[in-house]
Image (cartoon, rainbow, N blue to C red; front, side, top):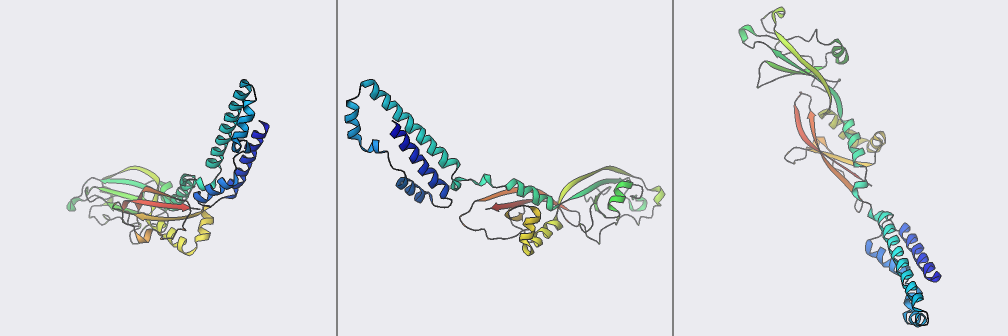
Length: 286
């Protein structure tokens, strides 16, 4: 029985060495080399000789020998399965690729802090039209964004205006700081309006996606280093599944490698203050 155990151990060592040296071989080649490397123990090959010897042993000894052989082979096969599944690099799945880390860093890169303020005016009749003023609005917000806001007049409710605040270069310079109803004939001291709650949130910005695309195409390696991620690509598509060329890159991915891909629903604000829904597709590989 000592010889059987030694034979099983030697076979396991041969298998482990072969497994650790094969990173990219096909499964069929891998299986062939396993069969060539790992030989059946000599005690199993010489079945007739073992049978003759066993016949000379007491029945209890022969039974004990069978149990030990079964246990040895069970442990050996279990060990092989464990090594084959958990240590063979060819069995690593796409889920092991850091797609979540890549997703978080890309979204952080294309997002910005956006403030939102709702304004309701009382009257919209041309003869007695109300407007609004942001002069006495929050000093902290005014100091933070200066005059860098744009106004969106609600087409479905003429009394409502939405003000978006953001950092420089996010909005159309022709729209920044302008209030559309400012030229009303009604004196400012008679304007009747109310300011709603002010909120801030991180939003994905159209301009920042374009900047990421430009950086990707011009300085890919530097971009990867600054984001601290591996190889990746990204595309933006509308809800109909059509890709938007200016908001993505078309990079050829090498063959025979693991690729992880993920679609993420996003809301994007553009330079005119319009918010649209898209799908962001991110791929990473190694």
